[in-house]
Length: 253
Image (cartoon, rainbow, N blue to C red):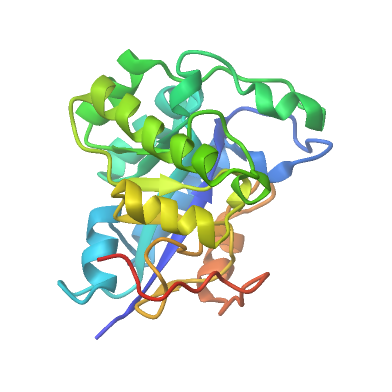
């Protein structure tokens, strides 16, 4: 029985210059995104939602062979404009992680890195995404590097308040969380557990397996230079963690 799933990490999807000068992991050119989604279908990969990922990794349901899950960090407007129509064409589920304290604003956290802030979806657009069958998860209130936050109380507020804001906006329970920048430590993972999230994803590079803590799940990043063949290679590769994963006493219940 299959016990692993490849969780893919995207950020923006759209039309960008051929070679962005930096932070290429932030971008996926729309023609390449279309080719990647077609490749998944052509080669028999099964795209599943995070609820199915959780159930499969907990042993409550069988994971399909060649299981893949799609996640999109930050909830950029271009997800709705460009990615969502392609996903709808293939009937692929996906999770969009929204920064709850910046809905309808711009990704101001990228400015210190030399990037131009881009528009983020507002509550109305997130409800539209939800109505299309996609999942909305939390990406904190303000997009901090949680492992660098000194106060446990501040970490807790980022996770608890963002969950509440999104649930109020969507009228639905928010079960999934993503650590901004992949930055997490034991305090952040425990805060995710206490806040009631069923899963939380990182930037650790590997396929997720039943051995992983559901609140520190690894993902594989897709960036601007990733072709359809490149994505296929990522799915074949048995990546190792870039850094040691956080190990808690027990996985999420």
